[in-house]
Length: 282
Image (cartoon, one colour):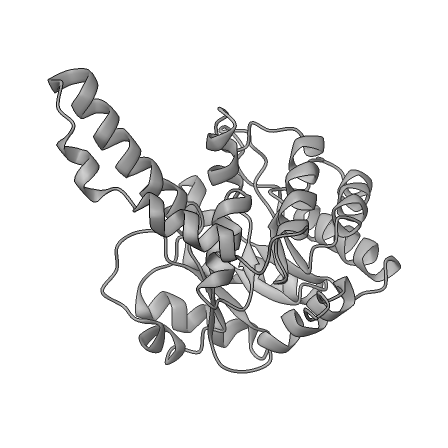
């Protein structure tokens, strides 16, 4: 008889435990197949990627509706026995009350964690003022607590991603989000040893997520030595898949050549994996 699948409470409990010590990688699938494959490789948790899923649906990053993202969260949560952290963008609302409602709906999908960004989506004013951002984070915290409090809340400072690579401002924001109730802190775009160490020290003892979205000589061990608790890859796995697809498709369209298929995954290998995949629901 097969082991019972873990409950939502089990997933959330194991997810929190991962943040208590050590360093783990939380890779970002963009659909059911990639989620199940990553589970099969032995990862302990997964995180959605707003960009990876948006591209798969023919949208730009940030171009999907809240309802579409919630449907995607439900799909990924149902597809895997692993805890899932939601890339929940800026909460799909400008005001705190709207963020609280969005977070309530996200928690109902069964996710084990979610992140709230301080980006506005407005190029002229790319970040919410810090007092507004803190109010929005507090609203997210209240919504999580009202639902039982076991969903992990991640506060994101988007300074480096929106063209304001100011480490002091980033740390000020992360510290404010930590005080507002974030369980984990995240500043995508920081990448030097000095920047990472400064962020880790500023919000200690709360855990820090580091984004590795480009080719890097660093190993998990190198990053763990800086005090980082978890490592995500954002849309990098999706972009890697798109990279192979684009290369092969362009070779056909522009040169009439098919040799880029030499790098393709084996159909037999994929069929064998998904035929035997224990995460399948039947």
